[in-house]
Image (tube, rainbow, N blue to C red):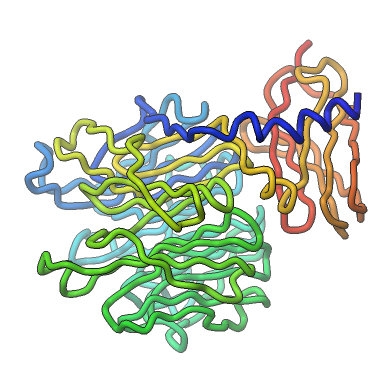
Length: 455
């Protein structure tokens, strides 16, 4: 049986490498833009609405404020959990089905709410201001959940540049003035609790900073040289070595409706060096996401198509899977601001509404080089199931977690160090019938699969 399972794992990607079809989640909320989306497992997630003047784009009143929406079935249906009368919600992150944080842009010229950071303990229904020390941020643009205890937050994109961090599940927070490095902060990607990258700008130039000591010190690994009002907007690593980031141009030519060139940046050495690559001219880049090292998307602001690349950014073409015109926006405002990748085959995108990409597997090389392959049998199972997985390099610390649909861990087991090769783990614990997810964490790489327990 073990040999048969490995054959399935190796050849399945070759059979499925074809099209990448995004599904518009027809029951999802729709507006000018949902700034962020975050999932704790493939089924449970939240989307947050910002705030904007609609003008001629809608029959709605000229202003709509922040909202928090939740799904518990993979985006099939959504419930409005919180509706603000004054906020511009910018980012969201959760550790489980109840506990999460929401960043507010807190721009008093746009919205009355100047509280930068909120916490929820009931899945987004109730938001409580987070008590923060000095230097206190004026707004928060991004959140990075490392584990159930360690969370980073950062912002704003137009300053001041402040980094927030908790190591005790949000009970207390520390703040760090980042003005020595940046004038604004937007997004981040962390490989673990100590190593990560944060994006933004320094003056008129886009910027990426790197830390290897949990944010105590930072090193500039990319800074633009055009001095033309650019911001590194979103960052995305489909694997440990390969990463991409979008550069948003907000210079004078944009506001004067004149021609301008745009770029994105790419690393193939784990973020040590970044290379600029040309993108579509006169394009307001925002969201960026990749399903593997070579296939990915860049989305723009309102009224711009989303583009796909199949060759690591060498060429781009329009992806017509986005941009469904949905009420209340009569203008085809696509406005993709965030991509989220969950496991090897599932992605979500947040823009004028919510989108879902599922059922496509990353390339053979990416899987072999960058993640433990896994499959479990039998599935569904009655009493026990065996998880088979393959490590492509020796890992000093391998962990297996099993969670229920609420994101609650029902098993957490450390398997210690394991060598390159094939391994198996027998899951034999009493569980009620239902759907579960197991996650294998081996070094920097994580893979998640669904389990179905039946009576």
